Length: 156
Image: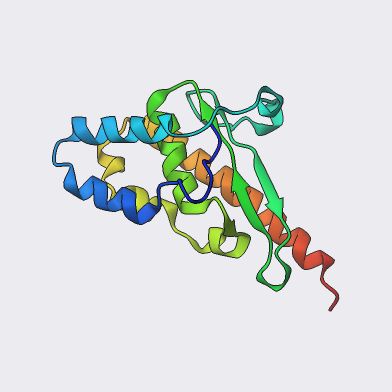
């Protein structure tokens, strides 16, 4: 799946608000799946071993694109797909947190705290929780690499 255009991508605040409106976990699971369905298909050329996330029980590809952003530092946009519906929804939540953000902001965001705030930690299997952490670490690694490259290109 690929992030929808920025004007249609669900924001993290909207996700948090919608979660608070849904009292039953079955409804929240359906909402997470719906978020995943709202993403565009990942082009086959991006389904490479290099884009595969290690540590996920499901098959997950999570390519990143780095955009130069002058003094603000590079921004990253993410694409992603999984063979599991819930995981696609988790990818959509990660896009809401990270896609289109500066590398420094990605590195300073505590995705696990957001994950826990949504109550996902208690309601997902340990395998899915570990997979979520693996996806977060992959995104952070891409942000670190982009940040380091931008710093090394800067004249001091």
